[in-house]
Length: 170
Image (cartoon, rainbow, N blue to C red):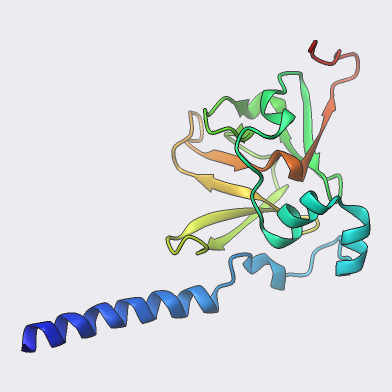
């Protein structure tokens, strides 16, 4: 009986610690930061589509395979859909097989990160360093040279092709 009590207490303490950390560290800890681009909820809702707002401001996730940016192969820059800040160069994009646009490195200084406990296991959330918009998550299972996989929501970005690049044929 004593073992069960100790084990139950230990499990309870671990669960309480995880829950406390989860509650003390919002999934989008960056929301407490002040960003160069700062708008009210009403201004963001007016600027963004309903789906963009859900991902960028409420930390949602678009369905896998739903973004045309996943298939984008032209040379250019992926920018934040909320504030137009350049985030990723097409040179760092690769096919991860996840159904979301993936990159092995952002443009220097373009993104910030915070801890995310939405799935109760810690992940690294990625947000725009200019407006704080949620972009996706970064994982340590990407290709060289960084070993990182920046798994981004395509709806949170726009694509600007290099001048003269023709759109892909349908």
